[in-house]
Length: 190
Image (spheres, rainbow, N blue to C red):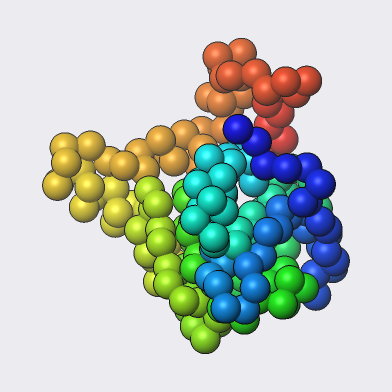
């Protein structure tokens, strides 16, 4: 099962990013679902859900989020900020003439969907977050979260972040153990 390539479009958002997205937006009398994938996926991860909901008469909009698929890949981390991502999705809905949508986010897409709901509540018919709970905006204290999850579950859910944040030399030393991506290898800048 696949998403029809001829239903893909591109739009230049108000942030200056080109978004690639699938669209079968429903007429105003029907509901449109905005599916937002996480990392490291693309819009194609939702192909089975799109096929199912289109058969039921729902419209579907499925973007490749920033940095993924055929959407822009800006080099500056600040361009990936959640308010910018949320506004870009509103630009896509505007392009498709969709006033309100059901938002379904998975993984990083859940964080983006949460910000859309927070910043543009009138555009959200309902919100579904898959695999990631809602986090209010603000600093993320992974040490506090590790303490809570270690106490509750016996293991720190974000314990691996210590390696990424405090031991880049360990990653560089063992880069050969990381999975290879087609045509790419992991690279760590010091």
